[in-house]
Length: 343
Ligand SMILES: Nc1ccn([C@@H]2O[C@H](COP(=O)(O)OP(=O)(O)OC[C@H](O)CO)[C@@H](O)[C@H]2O)c(=O)n1
Image (tube, helix red, strand yellow):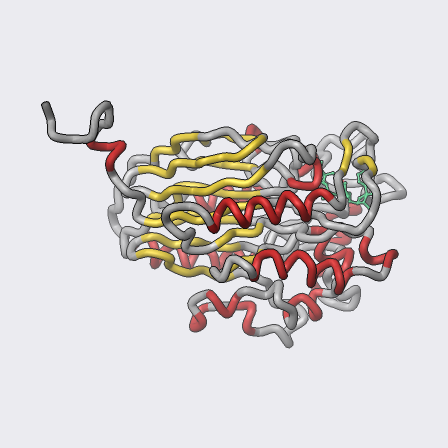
C-alpha cells in the first residue's frame, strides 16, 4: 500500500502550477448560418456566442480558476461590418468574457481588421497589452502608424506567454500610406498574380493571400530580445499568434507569410516550448523537429451547436496537459529537453 488514493499514481495526484483557457475564431455575428468561402463548411454565426457562454460556464466551474483566457483572434466575423453591427457584436462577446472576472488576453486576426482600423483596435478593449509587462510593450506606441501589437507576461514564476502580431505586415489593417502597407502589397503582388489577392488559385505558396500576413523585422528583433531574456532566466515560454507557423500543424493556406523566419527564431531559443494559433478552423497539431509543440485550435465558428471547441491548458513543471472539449482532443505535451548554455 502506497498510502496514495486508490489507483492514482503520484504524478496523477500532482496539481498543475496554473491553468488557463484557450478559445479561437469565435467569429460571432447576429446572422443566419452560412458557408465558408469554398462552400465546404457550415459557419454557425449565432451559435458561436452560445458556445462561448457554455465555455465560460465550464471554465468558471473548474476546481481551480484559470489564471487567464487566451482568445486567439477573429472574435467577431467580418460580416458585422456591412451589417453595421461591429460595435454591438463585440460588446455582446466581450460581455460573456467579462462574466468570468479573470483577465482575457486578446490576439488580433483578419476579422478584427474587417471590422476595425488598427488605430481603433489599439484604443479598444481588444488591446489587452496593459496586462503585459509595460516597460517592453511595443503596443504602447499606439500613435506610431508602424507599431505592432505584441506583448508578454509571466502568469507564474519561470513561465511566460508571448503574444505576437501575425498581421504586422499586411494589406488589411495597415494604413495605405504606411511603409508596412507598401512593403506588404509588394510582397503579396510578387507572390500572387491573381486579380483578387484574396484568391490562392494556382499559387505555389497559397499562404500569400490578403487574409494572411507576416511578422516584420522590427517585431522579429523584439521577439528575439524578449526570448534572449527568457532564455537567460531559464523560463518556459509559450508563444501565441493568430496564424500558424508550422506546415504540419495546418492547411498551408493558413500559414504566416514568413513562417520560416518566425519558426527558425523560436527554435533558436531553448525557452520556447509551444506555439498556439487559430485561423485554420479545422485545427491541427504537430511537434516540430526541435520539439516545439504547435497547436492550432479549432474555430468555434465552424463547430456544430451540439459540440464544442475550447480548451483548458494545465501547466506543470515538465509538461502541459491540454484538456480539450468537443472537437479539440486531449493531449499530453512534454516540454522539449532544454540546455541553457552560453546565455
Ligand atoms: N479562397 C478564398 C477564401 C477567402 N476569401 C475571402 O477572404 C476573406 C476572408 O475569408 P474567410 O474564410 O472569412 O477567413 P477566415 O479567417 O474565416 O478563414 C481563413 C481560412 O479561409 C480558413 O481556411 C473573406 O472576405 C472571403 O470572402 C476569398 O476571397 N477567397
